[in-house]
Length: 494
Image (tube, rainbow, N blue to C red; front, side):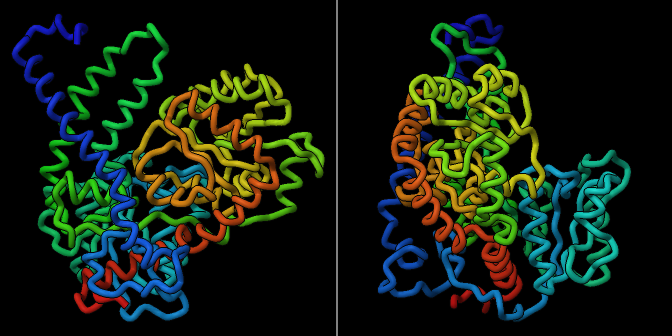
């Protein structure tokens, strides 16, 4: 706190310190309870988990009371929807170019699947660019199996103006009222959302998780390295007030969709959203796009200079090469690993500031740059273990699901969202505290296991992911929720 003594308003400083003290005082126990609650609720989860004892009775009842991920339930992909819905979607961006962000990929995957189920999907979004890739992703001519895209004007491509999108929505709603309105996070502000009773919001990250992210990023500072003034300003001036603001205005949304089990608990227990208004539906990825492929594996590894029978262990990481994705700790941990192991390689898919730092490690590291979906398939198949050292506990990273569907075990930061929703079984991989020492230690364990044991883990990952993390399962869960919002009789499962 010494760095704050130069503030001109000591009373304000005292208030901030007091506020921070009590926030941390109550937040840490709450987060501890959220982490440990998985063991307390195991009996409820086991009744519906795909990997649980088959003698457990299937879950039944009012879906609005379910506090586990709906992905665990059985929904029929072969049966047609009992009712065709007209759905409005508010998304700040629609996928443009070959490398869309996680939220955009989620929206595209979900609503393409629902449109192909026969629902009339209208997406209200920012202006699209005119790239050939964009035109390929969202063909305007085919309205039968793809969403109808309404991109507002008066802005540059990708620049969101909710008021313009709302005007387009109102025009379309007059033709035939929408059954359900869905907003991706705060694409539709709460002062509009509070007057829309049939609205659901998906949260891809909340401010309480941002507080954890700030803590983890500060903890990796080197001894003697000063805490930046920007960090303090962000914590006091943005993160903490935003948590309180969210707790207040989140109530204006009728239905809340959490994309991880831990986020669902935070919404219920900390944000104080009534239980029947919080629904957990995990994200899903295209099960047809990510799968095991021996030919892709051989081709990818040959490009790395590895022979077919090579015993080398290839670690892979994907995403933006920036600090909050954990690249500082991955860089240092792998640098220590190669001091004692000659049969390890690290392949990084992505671009960003840490690209040049990785090159310092020499031929043991390969930087691929940003990859399109087809290139990612080869990447996942070619590696032996996927590493996600993120310092941001927000949301639920799609790359973990893609790797598991491709038959790869994962190594991930031990956050409640990942531990409770993805790496729910020790067989699926390894978890570590987000620091260099812990990551180095689990890397040593993984390399010692060898490729054959890692492949066995990967097969179990694939089996679980195929039941939990597919686009089909996600779409069917959302469909059932939207039917429930439209008509209460669909809230009763099965």
